[in-house]
Image (cartoon, rainbow, N blue to C red; front, side):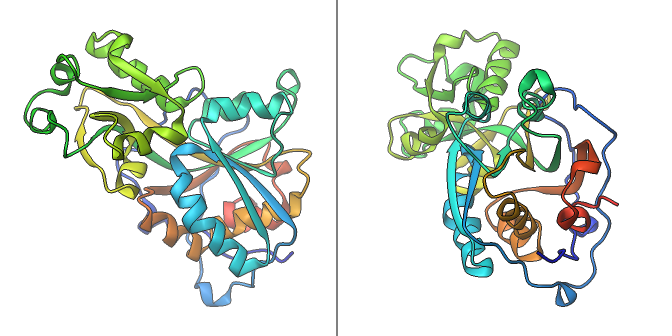
Length: 299
C-alpha cells in the first residue's frame, strides 16, 4: 500500500474552543499534522478484503451512508461497520465479543481503556481529529417545543410529561457527559430515559421523545433543532481513531484511515457536520503504521 501524501490543512480545520470529553491521555506528547500539499499529487489509496470498523454510534449516518460506501468505491475494500457506545465497544473488544480492524471513539477515555498490558494491549496509539460540544436536540412537533426554545432547559425537562432521552453513562461517553450536565444543573438522573446510542436519534425523530442529549455533529447531520446548554457547561465529545492491534485486516484498516483523512474523506466529514481539528497522535508513535505517517503527521 502506498503512502497517502496528504494531511489536513490546518487553517481549514481549526475548531474554536477545542477541548476533550474524555479523561487524560496516555503515552507521549501529541504531534500536530502539518499543512498538506495539493491532492493532485496523492497516490491512489487501495484496500482489499473486509474492513471491520467499530465506531461511536453518534457517527452512524456518516459511516453507513457516507464514508463506508465511498471507501468501498474508491479503494476496492469492503467496509463493515458496527456502531455503538464507545465504552460498550471497549468492553466488547476486551471481551472478544466484537472483532475490529479500526476503532473510532468519542472519548479518549475509551482509548486509554484499551492501552497497556492491564487492558489487553489492544491499541498503542490513537489519532484525535475532531471535537463536538454536547447540546439538546428537540422535536419541533413536541408540545413542549416552544418551552424549550424560550425557557431554560433545566426548567423545561422537569415539567410534568416531558420526555428527555440520553444514553447510558456506563456504556457511552455521551451518556456520561449528559449525567455530568444533569448533576451540574441539580437535576435528578431519573428525569432522563436511557436508550442505546444507536436508537436515541430515531426515537426523537419518531416523536417518542421531546428532546435528548446529542453532540453537535450528529445534531447537524440529523438536521435537529437544538438549544445550547449554556456557557457554564464545558462538555464535548473527542473523536479519535486507531488501527487495533491483532486486527484481522490491519492493512485494510490502514487504508480506511488513509481514506478517512484524505481530502475526500475530510470533505465528507464536514458535510456530515463533523467539526475537524488538526490531527494529534497520542501514545507510542513508533507503532503507527508507516503508511499513515504522512496522513497523521508522524515523522
